[in-house]
Length: 195
Image (cartoon, rainbow, N blue to C red; front, side, top):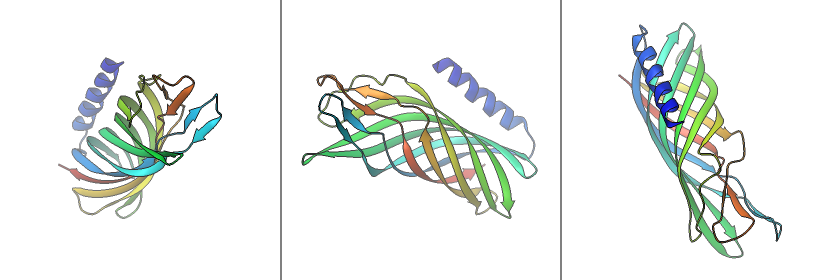
């Protein structure tokens, strides 16, 4: 699976570079969101996570086709959330590699909208004071939708919403029938620079 993601990234980069009027660049920013619910089936406990600020850093390519464009990205994301239960607060952290494959439309001057699937590879999950087993699926699929503004030929800013499509749970190592859903639901504010 890792080899397939690497091959897709290399091909997307090569195709992007080969197109005229396109470019590659770097991006980074803040993400504000949460993971899924923490649940324990025996006691029928279901706790939603509270949002916290995380960050993302990555690279992108962009191919322009008139008013349409294709923008593959490869992004390292650190997602933070918090669970509160019976006066105990536990911080949740997840690190992942995202590969959004976005199709966009330039709608008015520097303003554009975009959407597309996001391939996600979970690198690590951690819940404070709890030993978690590995997530059931390291590789998942989500969706991005958003809008952006080109501030210049090189500099842009965008705001997007990301949501994972399917549950991707990590079970507690020492608590039977307890699990946390690692599926992201977040707003992502990004700043990009195209070379």
